[in-house]
Amino acid sequence: MGAIFIDSYIVENCEEEFFESLGFGLCEGHLVYHVDKRPYVRKTQVGP
View 1 (cartoon, rainbow, N blue to C red):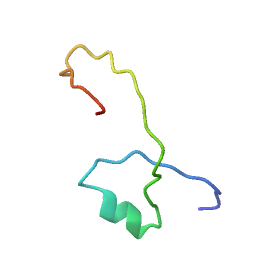
View 2: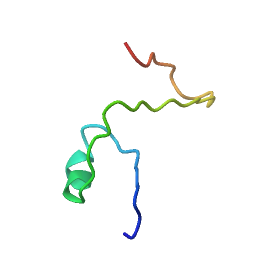
View 3: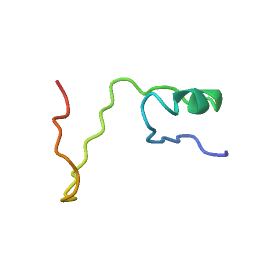
View 4: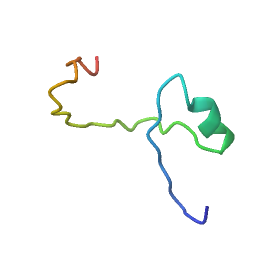
């Protein structure tokens, strides 16, 4: 791909096999935080 660092956000338990076949690996120790203000999204607790 010509890049040194590439990351991607994937769907858990769905896309891991495909991305691992491309050489991607889980980046342990990193968390993704986001703000979702869409009124039609059900609010769920994230984290422990």
